[in-house]
Image (cartoon, rainbow, N blue to C red; front, side):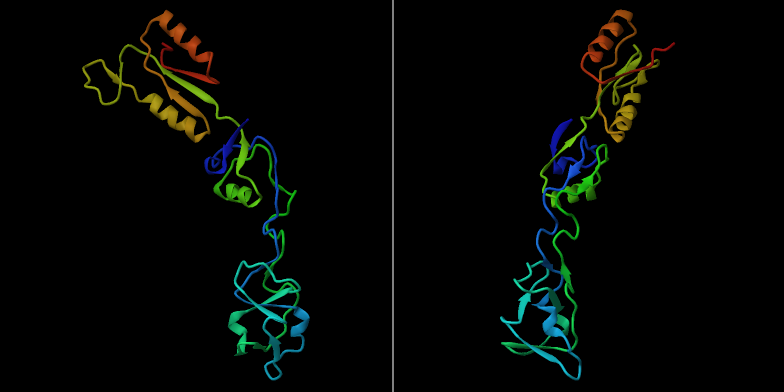
Length: 219
């Protein structure tokens, strides 16, 4: 495993389970712009018999995402609040407890499993880990893959070619495939058709890479 920051974690694979460090949200939050109230204070409100509430005593102005004021357990959205004056509002329908409130832990509860081990991290997973209190994650190291083309006839892309030359493009494709599969590819210079040189290069690569791919040379 290795530790990576969250902004480098997308596409990696978790090396251990991820357990939430904090809840999200970590407080009861207003889910609407409006007024925070005690639900019981709104009982009996109707269009013909509205209920009036005192700002600061029975109602507090809140914006979406604000912490719920102490003692409040519901939010009435601003569109249905009638302001009588600076100190009084009027409502025409009651609300139940936790109306338009995002309770603590609605998305994630501290200590809950967010992601399992060996999970391929998507952007949404990385966001969830940030919300759960993480800045870094333990992920599997990317397998290092050596791509070794062989053949005296090979020339790099962009080279002038003469009859008998072959542009070396296979390792470009193989490197792209390795990256798509989550590996870390290295393209080596072509090795000429010499048994001792081939043996030496493969031995060198095998000493420091997880996978060694020798391209061509089979015939």
